[in-house]
Length: 484
Ligand code: AMP
Image (cartoon, rainbow, N blue to C red; front, side, top):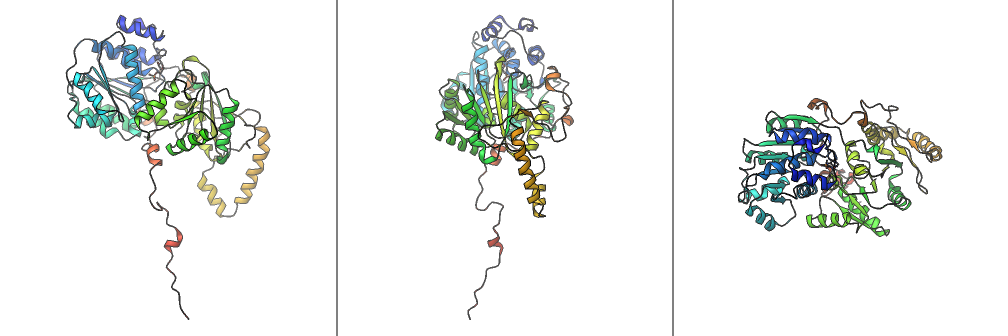
């Protein structure tokens, strides 16, 4: 299919051609005609599928007619993170360059004054994160009763981050006779419930995750002891021809620790995570995009959906807790048909998480050895069970066996060897690359449970005092000294 078959204006078609796109992606083919027909859309699609353009392109044409009024945006796009909001704003600029639409980006960490000034002039498109939008609404700076197009993007991520009450409040401020476009990478029951509440007779569109990462990303996995991970990473970076790389950690504090460690070892690195002030996040990202800094250590939330051209490498310093984050992480490289390489460092206890990833991507990840680093073995058993065994006194036997098999396998792992899930060679229901791009729309019951609130926030909660741990000496009755 060609873009010209999608009933887009010549200006938009020209901007698409300037961007170098020739054919619409599956989500664009399906969503654009429905959006133009003013239908509500429930889209099950991830970043990387071209979903941003699937709503931005038709919106540009739809908003071309009509005028914005002071403080009354004509459309609203909600994004979970500042980076995603900024990217959507960039898309509006890129595809709307032959139109005269006005746009405001309301994201935390930026000056209220500039944002208010824009709103005062009237905007056609308002792109916002929920918190900042409600802040400005509370100050009486926005009236949402004229926003007749609403886009809720990355709804499952909003759920993860605890934004759903804010989103519900915002939706309540919009007119009932609006068009709603609702996108989510997954459809757990809670997201389904929201979709039912927000959408009227929606067209349901589901596309497969972005073409399997296998196609353009050469993936590798190294299993090493936790204390060796930093050294292993340094060796990998030195041995690879890294033009620019994202390095993912699971927790914000580890982002900082790793960034400092890399810098201390003379690497050209920067850090990006959700606790940094917005101006610092924007500046860091710019420096990385411009090639001023080569390595960006980041958390999943900060780096999700980042579209950085020609990234040569992705390193997963930690195995992601949720398998689908692996796909998001490595999908930052190998974009637009360019080759990319990814490396994941796993500790032995990450066995189950690695197996879940292998199952999800439907592909074994070749295991590599790193010169100078002793390879370890993945363990699939629950840690708790191992500890229980340890208490029964069996541990030394198990440990010895593990250690010797680890040594034996050290040589074997020098040959690239695939990782299999513990149940043997996994046979996922369907490999992503076999599925084609269009999928049956998932029912809530077929999808995973909603995640716990964003672990980035959760994990970094400060422990006060002893936390949950009561030291034994405090529980003991005080000894009374008896004098002779
Ligand atoms: P998204 O899923 O919206 O994050 O888009 C992922 C990437 O695909 C972005 O770099 C877009 O610029 C790019 N893209 C969007 N539409 C197309 C298309 N029709 N052909 C090629 N690339 C596209």
